[in-house]
Structure formats: C-alpha cells, structure tokens
Image (cartoon, rainbow, N blue to C red; front, side, top):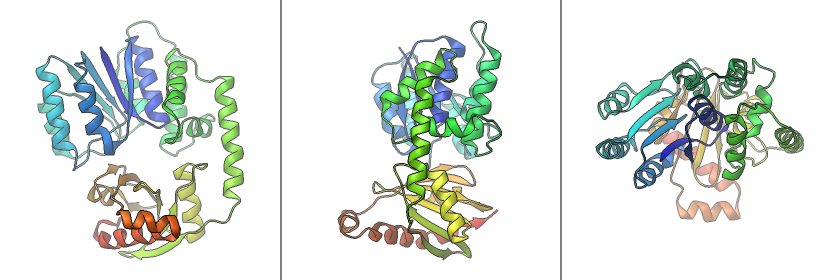
Length: 315
C-alpha cells in the first residue's frame, strides 16, 4: 500500500492531490502537523507500506532523530520514502535523511504544491493548465503573495481546524484535475462572512518589546486564519512580530523583517524566516487559570517569549 503523509493546510492538501493527479497512484492519505509527524510516521510504518511520500512538512530539532530511525526501519522493510517540502531545513537534516535513503526535494522558491509540480514526472498526459493554475493559486495563498486571483479563495478553502473528511473531499476533487466547484464556493463565501463578523469585534492584543523588537500576542480565532489575524494584530500594535496562540500550546509566528524561525526552532518547531510555528507545553495550572481568566495564557506565552528573547532578531 502507498501512503501520503501531508500537512493539514491548503498547500498540504493540494500537494497531495497534485501528486496523485500526476502519478495516478492510489494512496492512503494521512494528515499531520510538524509536532506530531514522528508519531504519524511510526503509525504508517507499522502498516508495512510499499511507499511513503511526505509533503509540506519539515522535521524539527526534537523529532529529527526519531524520524531518521523510522525511515531506516521503512527502508529495511523494502519501502521507499520521498519527501517534498519548501520550508527552511538545517543542512544536517538533509544529510541525515539523504543517508537514510530518502529521495529529497526541498525547494524554498515555491510552495509544496509547486515542489511537486517541479519534480514529479507525470505518468500520462495531464492538463498542464490545471497544474499551472493550481500551483499559482495555492502558492499565492501559502506564500502570502496573492499574485493570483484564486489565492484568497484557496487560503480559506482548507483550515487547520477542519475535519479530515473535508480535507479528503478537497483532495479527491483536486486529484481529478478539477480546480473549483460550487461546494468549494459555498464554503469559502461562508468563511468570508464569518471573518467580517469576527474582525469587527474588539480584539485584545498584548504588546511587548523582545530584544528590541515590538511583538504583538493575540489568541487564535476559529473563524479567522492565523495569518490574517497576525496581520491585523501587527497593524493595530504597530508591531514587527505577531504571535497567535491557542489553548493547546500551538503558536504561529508571523513577522515583517524579523527572523522568527530561529525562535520557532528553539521552541521545538520550524518553518520560514518570516512565518513559522511551534507547539509549547502549557502547564495544567495555566490551562485551568486561562479557563477562569482569559489573559492567563497570553501572559504565560509572554514569559516564554522573554525567556527566548535572544532568538528574536531582525533580518
């Protein structure tokens, strides 16, 4: 059996769909986040797959050794592993996985869907216009360039809080070479409306100086994408960095002219220089306190940021 392990956002879903469209291979789709990638890969290994393709996910300092071990086990059982990503990787990660037998394609000039389009050879005749439009639309959303008219729609098509059933619906449609449907349209229009309502509400932003950089901290909204929320928080606070947090400890880092990836790596995550993320441990006492007093979680994250101030540096 073939497995595709991919990220939970639009780029991850689209990359998986494009891989299937180009190869015509039947695969089981498994969704993952960077923080749980090692567990997901181990579960896949136990199913004795013939091949594993990893998309739009990078290892991090805390998971690298475990992932290399799982890859070695997969290879020993005769399985193949290919990895397509566009995040910033440490040189030693590339070396370790390369030595373990992984077929690596890491390209920071595009999104994961673009990496697949560049490096996967079609098994049969394909609609090149579909491929090009999908890559441009998805990359414009994922890289925040919005240089394609469909990018604002793709950004809202899949959210990380969505059910896997919706991700699979989007995957199934795109993998057939269909870019857009009425069902997609309805979902996105509904989300636009929800965003307008949510962004019209007052928003509490905690502001602090970290290593000479102005940082805005805000709690996650279920109705607004983290990148949009971060942009609003930075605008309101005239900040260089925005930190979007949720109760599970997941944090999204966005910036203008500041390297936030080093901070993310220090916290066990990774990503891009100006868009990264991590998951931190939130003590039970803080979780309880945040249920009683909403600012408790924000205050805890502020303390964590201050402790890691040396990792926040301007580009």
